[in-house]
Image (cartoon, rainbow, N blue to C red; front, side, top):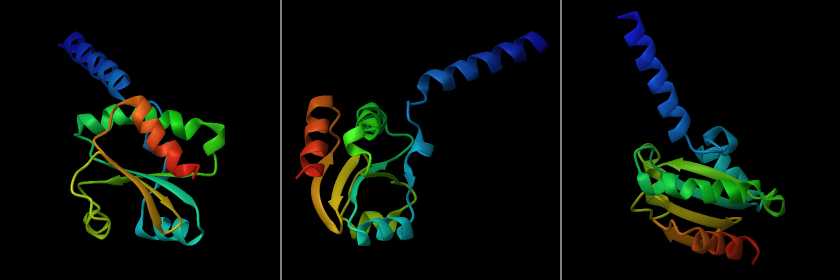
Amino acid sequence: MRALKFSLLAVAALFLLFTASPGSAQDWTAYTPQSFAAAQSEGKTLVVHVHAVWCPTCKAQMPTLDELKAESGLSKVVFMRVDFDKEKAFLKDHRVATQSTILVFQGQKETARSVAETDRARLRALVLGAVQS
């Protein structure tokens, strides 16, 4: 029985290791209405990922977004993740109907939006085009 418990724990640990995305949520700026408003009022560029933990499309977007976040040319860009299931006011304020939505803001102005894009090249082009314009 003890060996079975140990085996189940080992399998669970491996599952978590291989399903966790690189550059997890703690690497991103935490979303709160206050942190979002402060970044906007300071005129910062924001990349906002509206995600849900259960969303496979959101998970597919993460490697590309984490790659962009790590680029030295984007070090001043604020990357923020908004929880689709919890932040209903944000969704309403920004007319977001579904998870896996990516928004780019220059200060208070939305400059780009993508819904459910997982193609690496197109997602990179969208973010880089909006950030560098």
